[in-house]
Length: 152
Image 1 (cartoon, rainbow, N blue to C red):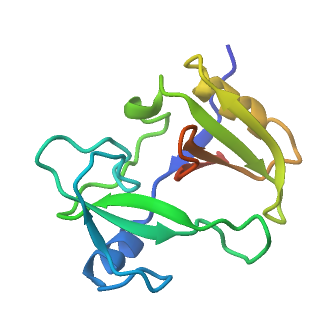
Image 2: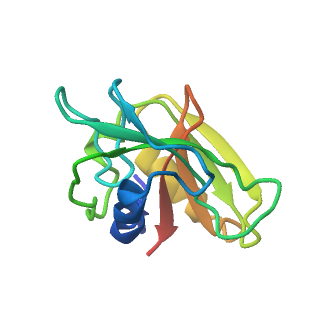
């Protein structure tokens, strides 16, 4: 088994609080209350019945390039505690996921699909590659950004 030598980063609280209060996301879309259940990118857990989510467009990239995707994400409308644990969030451990390893220029260096519950180990293996600067974990079915993994 590969030792897990990375940290998971949920969306920063300050960014989520700013987006919750704004009438529009950073791309000019009006914030929408989401009726469907989905994973909050701040607490990194799937919403439970009765919890309200907000749908907005988000880009997890710091620079502009052809790989800097913008896509839909959910955050809890009424607030939640940011995910701060070291390992893979429990709600994602057994789910099929797409892993994208990016280099320092924020271009895709390697991509993998995980359907067998080994995402934690596969993230560690990607980050063992010196060419990979960070990994984005994404929904396998919709391609949406979930969270980021960086070396410790």
